[in-house]
Image (cartoon, rainbow, N blue to C red; front, side, top):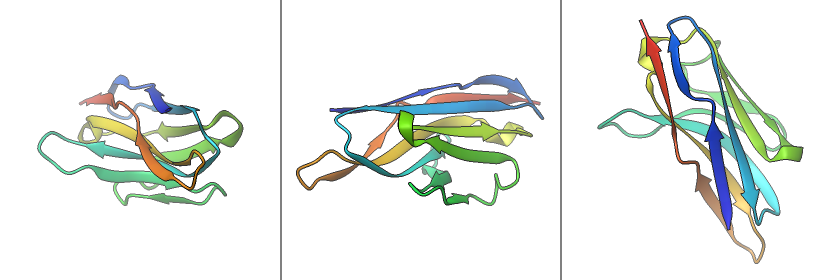
Length: 120
């Protein structure tokens, strides 16, 4: 069994910063890509940022220059540093990880979601 546990969401004023964390635990052999998505009510989940096992990153245009994704492979943890936050960043953020647990099976796992609220 694999779990992704998120932390770090909350309420912040526009222009402020938050740091999200997501730790994977359980039966883990290898973790490939890790990343963050976000979803507003009634809308599709959208990619925010992704980081490969080698450290290459990719960002949605809407967050480039403001958000930074990083990971600690020794801790099976991915982070999202969010700076210069805007009210439109107010949504639920979900982390995900592509995990190999053995027996030839790769699966995508998701965190429980963490609410980020940016006040104007």
